[in-house]
Image 1 (cartoon, one colour):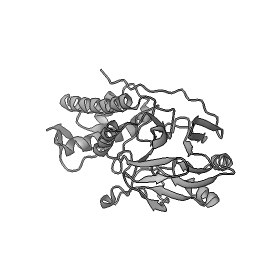
Image 2 (cartoon, helix red, strand yellow):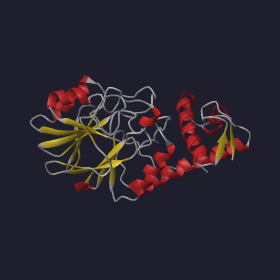
Image 3 (cartoon, helix red, strand yellow):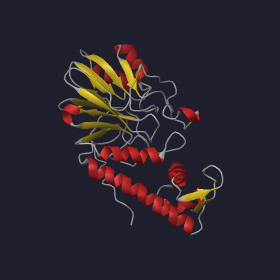
Image 4 (tube, one colour):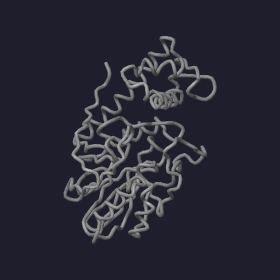
Amino acid sequence: MAVKIPFVHEIDIEYGRVDQVSPLIRRVTANNPGGFTFKGTGTYIVGQGNVAVVDPGPLNEAHIAALLKAVEGETVTHILITHCHSDHSPAAAPFKAATGAKTYAYGPHGSGKPQDNVEVEAGADRDFVPDIEIRHGDVIEGDGWTVECVFTPGHTSNHMCFALREEKALFSGDHVMGWSTTVVSPPDGDMATYMASLELLLTRDDEIYWPTHGPAITEPKPFVQAYMDHRDDRERQIIEQISEGRTTIPEMVPVMYAAVDPRLHAPAARSVLAHLVRMVGDGRVSCDGVPDLKTVYKVA
């Protein structure tokens, strides 16, 4: 039986509106809904007076204007970027120009796998380079708020979450989202590191997650465990598919994702590839050559 993840799809938003979602956190949502962004990119403002902004979002003039209006009369001291996709980081440049704040991130897109010279999926923001590179465990302090950097590669190799200590809240970016599972697409996306990053979250005491897309996750640990169980179940299904004679990804996907809109089968195939890269890596599955969409796989 397929694992049930307790997704939540209800969220009260109005594009451009400033929502006070907790004592220290405000959210402004961009009008960029879609299959990967749900209702749109939620940009978070942390603190009052001297503030940090998490994931300024896409190059959307109305959204940038709404952000600037939201912090009018305040000083933006930090711009924090979870990762470099086109719905998260491009607005950092004009927002920085308007506010003078420095940008903080693990590094440019692909920087978590520099040895691979990663040229990856459409939608990557290859123009973004942070002013200050951050690493796991770094602490960023502001006026009445403290943010700890939590490195969570997997969705991208440079994905960083940010933990607001005062509220035991985690800005989870695209690593964990309340409305959907997360896309993991090789070569920059990596299922083995993604699963390890989920395991890391289970060791923490965060009480609420604020994803960049969708509603808050109010019971983080059971949710993360369900995420992991879902991925384990996918790998069980892959073993089953290979054992039944469907040994290539194009043969597996229509069966594994029979209930999913066929238009989403292409990203589903990338996800299956991510699993197979992991499974070949740990010896459960074998193949000739490098794992790819057209590779023939067998149970080791």
